[in-house]
Length: 480
Image (tube, helix red, strand yellow):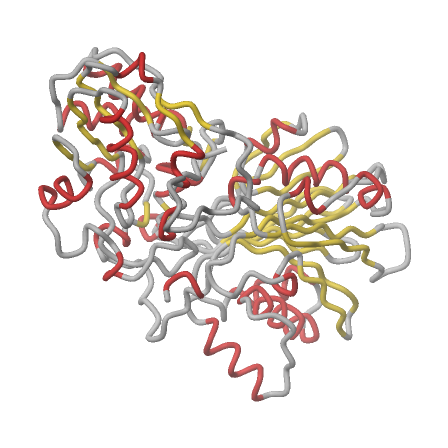
């Protein structure tokens, strides 16, 4: 699980969602496997989760679904899972970046329409969702949720009325929707996976015995004992039926350089044991740390990472600089989503409750502290402060990403520019604000090296968006 320390003033980044789909040709129940798959994707969303299943040999259009607010182990009980019978299913974990955090907005979405039933799970953000939604509303559509995933579901359903197959309907919908999306769609006899042509969000294919899996991250395949088959290509639609996998690449960009994977999957979102489009997340973080050591060296006695996502980069920095790598922080793993945050007047700080410093490790030492990002700066200042209280002689902060300067519209909750500590400030000013002896960020040109040459989106650092940003803010409540 990646670190979730930044509880102060909302100083924390979130991914939007994780998706998981499974089709077992041997007609075994898939719900419990989907549950364990979602458990492995829990880092991608902790607000709500859900599972929808169907039986391909049973009556067409009969879908059993259950979803709720909270973590997987809070929402699902053995009795609930045992009641979800079916050999095809989709699951979802959610953190809301667009659309409020309510049970209505939990996924998968199950849609009954003239051609039958669809269940859909979506990771990403559409930039043209408000326009599409208004267009649908004017034609009489009634929405049950405030999320753009329902806009996608409506468009698939509309296209399905005009086309001969669900996969053709998905392709038709993809021509209208613009933005970031990895989709898993369940129809009565098929499971479909689709990825936007830019490839913002990950999606891969796995296989276990006589079952196929579609999932956001490869680490979930390891959890359920499945083998990794391949990544879904940006722009590709894959259709899984009892006859196997069919691929449609008509919507893939001819010019691969237009692709724009979210670089923050490598820096922070994905679990280190995942591989995203052929690049190991763990190795990407090691490379970032090595680059920081080359570009921003400093004399010190110890390199430490802020758990969890700072650890890989800290190890890389240590390997390159030959400065010993150590553990400075003990993390309380039992602070979950329902954690009651201390009041401002309270002496307890959310960071201190989640994180403690090993005084013996840092006392009297010059410490290099590696973290993956600074958003508003409040958490960084607190962590630097507790290192000093523990006796650290010097604290040098190194960040394994460039400074955040611009908001994201593709599914990462980077706040508006006026709330970003790096916006309008020099590195030295930020350094003074967080109380560090020195501060350096990863250079932007290092990001492509980190992704081993794959085309990536760096808009939150550079302001160069691969898609024209929307005129109105689509990013939901966190940006207010």
